[in-house]
Length: 301
Ligand SMILES: [Zn+2]
Ligand SMILES: [Zn+2]
Ligand SMILES: [Zn+2]
Ligand SMILES: [Zn+2]
Ligand SMILES: [Zn+2]
Image 1 (tube, rainbow, N blue to C red):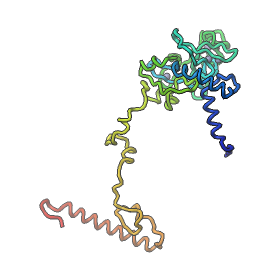
Image 2: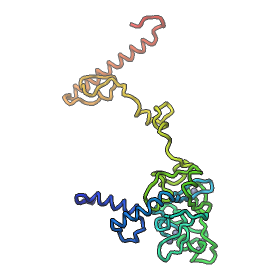
Image 3: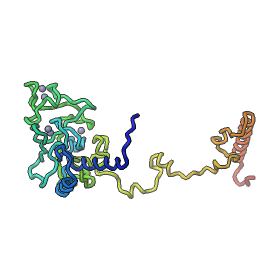
Image 4: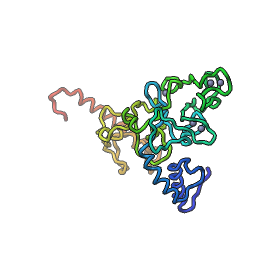
């Protein structure tokens, strides 16, 4: 494995760069801002970004956000979400809100998500891939004449065909009104629909079509009950074993520990001890059994 070593202070510089990149996105046009320009940029952009954030998702006809679009999510035009216009000084009045691509020469007028089948691009019913269609002109096919617009029968994880889904751009108010997650205010560029770690999973895997998020602290802090997962119960259970591991000479009822060979024992001593233990346990078991058949009212000896 190759090891990456950094000079003193190097890690901090990398963090600083990543923070810069997340915040500025593509807005520096590929040329790093000077510290002054960066400060100026943050002063100008962050307030409007926090105020006017837009959430982008790909929604099934049943209302599940099957895909939450993030900065790196590709558009139908093959460019990523972060390469589209995502910051607005004032939120446009018209609906739907279109997020045009900002790559020079690209004529995509509105961000449009197109799913993949695993790592494979999906095909239109005309047999051609999405990128053979025209993102600017009604998604018609550039490779054939029989296609009247990209339409894929690929079935999403939610069970609905891809063509029945819509790319949806929403404001904070739109989201809240529907009980959809909005996450916390983040200063980063082109966050789209990402509101938390689970945003990266497909909608049907989040299994929470409301997506309102994690249960309240009250629920999480409540004591573990018999209804809970065995793993939780095991964690909660105080150790009831009377045995201590520190005392090597103690022979407990559990054979788990005594079956371990002691360091100063030879073979014969070990087998002898195990034999004696077994006899003792059998005797104890027989005694218990005897006790159980003692008629009620008799004092146990
Ligand atoms: Zn696009
Ligand atoms: Zn584009
Ligand atoms: Zn075609
Ligand atoms: Zn087509
Ligand atoms: Zn779906």
